[in-house]
Amino acid sequence: MKIITDKDLPLSGRTVLTIGAFDGVHIGHACLLRSMCAVSGEKQLPNVVWTFAESPKALQNGAKYITGSLEKMDALEKLGAEQIYFADFERCRSLTPSEFVEKALIGDFHVDTVVCGFDFRFGAQRAGDAEMLKTLLARAGVSCIVVPPVKAGDETVSSTLIRRKLTEGDIEGASFLLGRRYSFLLPVIHGRRLGRTIGFPTINQRFPDYQVVPAYGVYACLCEVDGQTYRGISNIGVRPTVSEHEDAPLCETHIFDFSEDLYDKEARIYLCRRIRPERRFESVEALREQVERDKQAARDYFANFL
Image (cartoon, rainbow, N blue to C red):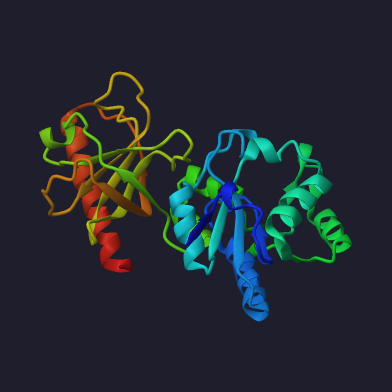
């Protein structure tokens, strides 16, 4: 996938473009990509995804991201995106809707067709909506396709809904809406090696401040590293039994039948099912006994579902 920078603008030829935050790149976003790719193929024009990199101000109401920029790019490319542009959120937020259309979409990208979601908002104070975008583009002779909502039961698929399911521990529900198993790719960091003292060595990963943290608890998981996939259990939380103070949340993963050193490597954790919430135990021995039960619960899950 080609990354378009400001130095590349304005582009020399016409484009088919889809626009949005695309956080999580879920099954609703996949409909936008399919529509964009269909028009792009029919008109033999390059396609572009216009979006934002992670920014504290790019999401509303203090929400956190489901995926970072690299994972967003990977998911979009798998759906057929050829080029991606990460816009400067601070610069775009000050443009009126008409300025945004004239300067950004028509001026910089020479759009032939724009694809957006039914709930798309743009411009200063989020004053523009999908219908306004369609009207403003029509004045310039540009087509606009507004993709209707995608439903899962009675609920509209959205990044907000997926964040809610993750923070509630409904990993299977979140994965269904994403169209793939929920995962995160993070470096393995040095920890306190407390897991080794009770017979369960773990790899430790810290969530970036911008990323949504799933509900605290223990999960059956898959760990992918160096092209190999292993089964295990992950504890997400602050380790109340062994930590006197509440630390920043970690993901601690015990990989079954594995003893290699993974420090400073990147590991992708696929959460499969939440086994139980995180809780404090009266003793380290009680914790050790519970981890044995958690391991068996995960093995039972894998035996029945994988």
